[in-house]
Length: 446
Ligand code: SAH
Ligand code: SF4
Ligand code: F3S
Image (cartoon, rainbow, N blue to C red; front, side, top):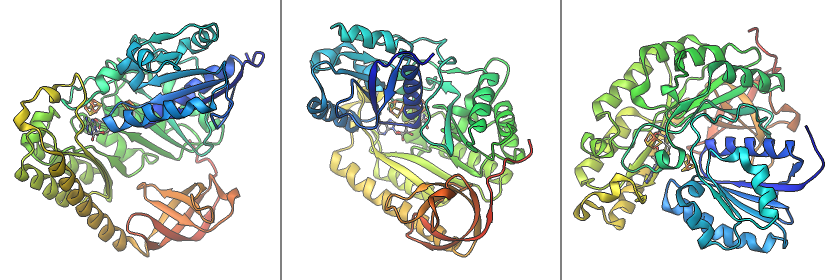
């Protein structure tokens, strides 16, 4: 249905993979309506800023960026804000930024073409209703990566962690039908993509009414041509024995889990309403490691949550050491308007300098752990999928099944291939490696 050209569209995405995936859906939808994707805002007919609201810092960046984008706009350029910050602020954003024409939340992308047309006729609109049926099944995601694909399997979130804005920006949890996920996986495989990452806020709570996440892993993992299946982010409480068995028994499911811990203190976890204790988290780690030997674990941790004492923070440090995470994303608590954490008593708030100091100490402990584990891996051999030319441009960048980044020498034509690589050096966080034998990216038998 490629219709006459309506001009060019540029989408700038912030936040998580869910947003990256949504941008691919938006590009796909707009392409069907005659908009051509471009990779820079300068002179684009439509500019969309696809935003994140997870921390205040993320929103401030967008506010600053919206100002900057003015200089790339022609008199008739349509500027839209999409994603989580759009959902959170709604019409207030139109008030605040007069050069913004459209504000569209994550469930409103079906209306993009008509809203853009309206904006061209001078309308300024905020569209922020949730649509619990919306999975954009008939959209054709426009993917720019030929090696790996993000596959959304669930939208929204039914947990209510007290610090988190996501339930407010993405609405209630709903899952796509298993058959639709498998169909999309087959489509990307037909285009030569061999690695997929299943996306959801609590992805392992996936349930389409008939099938759970275990069924989904087995079904996606068996799609011909798919060699690696990843997923993010699971919740510790949703790792049923069925799901863990499916991970262990499906050869394409990679030996890496990103398992957000948030805190190592049961008191803090309770205040966060994470619905598990330190012991519960450790038990989950043990079950996963028993079923999947050599499993790599990464995590998310928040410091400075209201009420976090020095002892609570020490428990986070000790939990990090106890688990031995391969890596971690660390954040200073950021109060989000409307979330329960902002209503906690004033005296519980952790001063910024204390939170900053904790963050630094936590990062040091994580780095130290990552470094010693990585040094111990030198000399070992791994299957590496070559993903792209590295940022510095002289080496290729790939990943092991355990999600470790490896830089290897080679030609651009090797992108998408699998090679056995010996790890020869490490910066502490990433590796350099040497190819020990080459294998083509042949699809495996179903
Ligand atoms: N759904 C995912 C997390 C999505 S948000 C999950 O439950 O694991 C990604 C990470 O941002 C979270 O894991 C948390 O560590 C962090 N985060 C969320 N809200 C935050 C806030 N208000 N302040 C600081 N960090 C936050
Ligand atoms: Fe936010 Fe918690 Fe839902 Fe993750 S599980 S998106 S942290 S509310
Ligand atoms: Fe940000 Fe929304 Fe993702 S708040 S982290 S873009 S779900």
